[in-house]
Image (cartoon, rainbow, N blue to C red; front, side, top):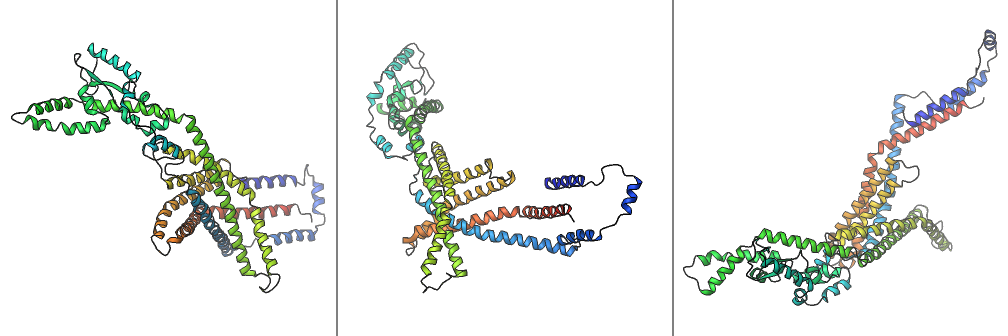
Length: 532
């Protein structure tokens, strides 16, 4: 039994108890008095008449079936009328907001977002000219700055003592270094690579400080180090493996010149390098260097300040986009409504009539009143847009710390976060009298809208390219793209939401029917109170 049915039953029971006529034991004399009393037939007839005026209880199966069919048709017609209204609204809104004003806002979007990240600058993608200029002006690599650094000298002395004591190991081969021979202290990640690292420059870390650590410095033979030079470990090993292929060629010769013997000796020395040991050391060194760069930059005041400022700007842009979009969409909707009304009812005057302009003025006032009444909605739209824009910028920054986003991806993130924000808002703070099930249904619709708009942003690129390829349409490509993609997206949104609503159509029909039934029962209950 539903809660409404239960409440109705309890109400009727309470009414029944309150209408109890006899509240004491009844004797024979009282029964005889009742049976011999006069009956007011007129009052009985009046009660019966009043009941008949409310309901005709003689309903056939065919009449009941006809009523249900008519009821559902009327309900579906109301849904269809709502579909047409929503279609007009969604098309106008899509043309004006995400693909109109949103297209203008997107002009200022940048590949990689608005904040410089380590990932992006290493790929040559900069959000600000200041950081790009800082990298361009980093200065040339100076080997002395790195090899005459005090830390480098101290670590080198320690390794020299270990070699003389027979405790030093070549990090590339795993073999003990000859105590009688000299060795080199190698920058595993080369000093030049560290100097030219855009991430290091962005983090504003001194190159020699970053390069000269126990993790990045390791002893190796002079031959290995001077062959490696400033190459990365990966490049060095690739070159080494290509070079040592010549060993078999030299060994197969009957006789070797002094130069060839020297070359063979060096190649055999190189062949002792264990690629896995070398790459493990390289991976460990790079991991520690990147950890220091990331920690220094992402906890810096510069990064925090830039992220906060750009998030506020993005919030303001998204807020203005939503607020202006709502006002402009309302303006066009009001204009179309007035045009339709004029088409149906005319101006109430001839064009030659002096009152034409006064009537036109009144209609413009009506449009202005409608727009003015939306100021609270516009303020709410700005707030929602600001919050979602602020969050979308933060999300974009986080994503770009790992992978560089394109301009359209930035826009998709912004529109997607807005839809997600509205969906979460409906679920957490549903409007008054909205059940959780209804809130969940509305959240699904908002997420579907965000997905369709995101797909529209992707399609927009191809539609724009197609229109621009047509010589006649090329001058109008931006406008045509906005209108065409906006209209298609608006229609797609409307039809999708209609489909989602249609799935719960039967529930709504039953709910409406139960509402009418409840109203009928209330009328019956009211009859019990009628005094006749």
